[in-house]
Amino acid sequence: MKAETPLFEVKNITKVFTTGAGDFEALKDISFDIYRGEFLGIVGRSGAGKSTLLNMLSGVSDLTAGEVIYYETDGSAVSVHSLNQNQLAKWRGKNMGIVYQSFELMPMLDLVNNVLLPQDFLGRYKRIASPKQAVDLLTQVEIGEHAYKIPAHISGGQKQRVAIARSLTNNPDVIIADEPTGSLDSRTSETIFNIFKDLVAQGKTVVMVTHDKSLKGRFDRTLEISDGRISGEVKRGQYVELPASEAQWQEPEKEALDEALVGSVGAAREESAIVLEDVSKTYVGPAGEFTALQDINLDFRYGEFVSIVGQSGSGKSTLLNMLTGIDLPTTGDVTINNVDVYGMTESQRALWRGRNLGIVFQFFQLLPQLTLLENIMLPMDYCNVYKPRERKQKALELLDRVGLKDFARKMPSAVSTGQQQSAAIARALANDPPIIVADEPTGNLDTKAANTIVELFRSLAAQGKTILIVTHDPELTRYTDRTITLVDGFVVDRELEPALSVA
Image (cartoon, rainbow, N blue to C red; front, side, top):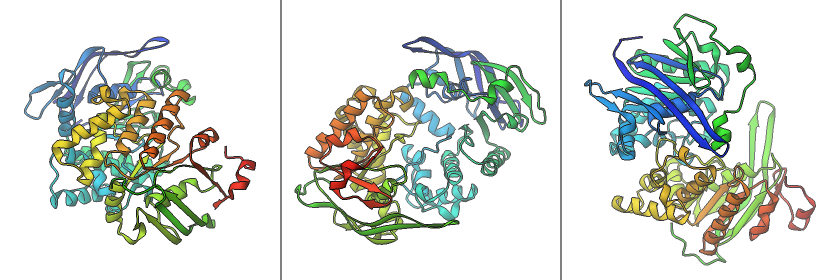
């Protein structure tokens, strides 16, 4: 611990969620301080309340009782939960960097532009200096050589480094990391942990949530949380078994809270939006070559609603990468909206993609520290579409279109999964692209929410947009104009489709 100057004071905070099964008390009268320049670990099993506690620190979720006070460098105190949403967004952008387990990178942007997103939203972007700063930050986390790649072309550990670099963009006092090593192998996890240690050595305060009990004695200080309460404290070099932990940690439990809350189109319909000619994709690995797509010839028209189906491993995701310019074909040509996609540089392709394609992902990929409204404005801002004063109104109109106007200033964590998917679709429409590509867009939704999404896609196709959805659900194919079936990298003849399983 570097000094006794508090950065945060957490005073008697309680958080109660009201669900259909009754009230659930996620945090119970918790009090502690966070000091400047320390590496604080918050450790506990799934369902203990760790992520809820982080949401309290960052103001992402409202308190039921208590207070969180943040002390600025000049000593002035900020009561975090007394700020309105606009004030909170500015406070977070200035003082806090947030790193999530699932990275939350924008897949259509290169690493440099992913890192610059927080700066852009605070109005600090500078055309020459900012990209250089982003490259410097990526170099600091040992991934500078990949600066102009897109997330699909790097590993999970490298994506997490990008997320850390992004959290540093506005030079915040504190970095909050929620299970940043949870999905990584042990070697990569150690690299990420050491990056955080280096940041603390540079004067940053790092608060890291983890379920990994082996890290307890490696933080400057560790708070163990169990059933919504702090059950013990460990300082660096100590390893004290705290009450009621070992047996529970060996059997992962699903967090109770998750269970409870859980260019313009002017072309005629007969014109081609996307043409694939003799496209093949072969990957080379330690085990040899693997051909994911073989001699694909497809033509998608404007105004078509098309489903792409096939068993796992059939080539659906690879085809999607071809259609969106994310991955290069080994052989063949891809023309989208009359443009030779792979004749452009990576940076040109990223900007082109933002203006001509709307991409919807199964897991939404909304940035959790931004409101729904700000998430919708992201593509407009990046691609410089519409005048700055018009963007908010355009985003509100899109949210209204998907039934979310009343939720515009809510954070993604404050709305349902169906509403998050609707917001992701609104974001895909932000720049009025002629083509929408959706990867399992209803995979995480209940029947009612899925039907709403399908009807929205049908209405967009009726307006002249090309809609392509990859799905495992054969029921969805009843609503599309036609179905493309993939088997082992080949497109199957239509007459054979009814005889093939697509589950």
